[in-house]
Length: 110
Image (cartoon, rainbow, N blue to C red; front, side, top):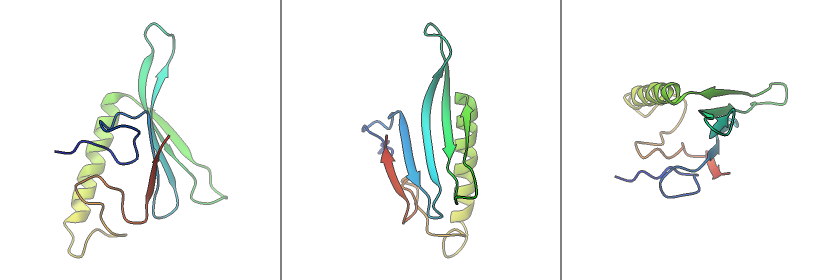
């Protein structure tokens, strides 16, 4: 099974940041944060969601590993539910089980 994540800077999918643009124009960025002192820093997964227009502002969250896993499971469950509808998911083409972003989305490692 291929475990590489598109847009990361290595073959194991452990790059520090993954960025991509959604089909509706939002920049998404997933990364790794180390917060606090150098002896035992708190490790977090960062999630940044860019603005969709100049009138809006983006947002971000710092998630624990457990919270990030919960979010990943919830997103995968919702994607699977969208894939069950005839004619593909509502709102656009599917990236499929490979984890590749939807057609038209771009991704890049940073």
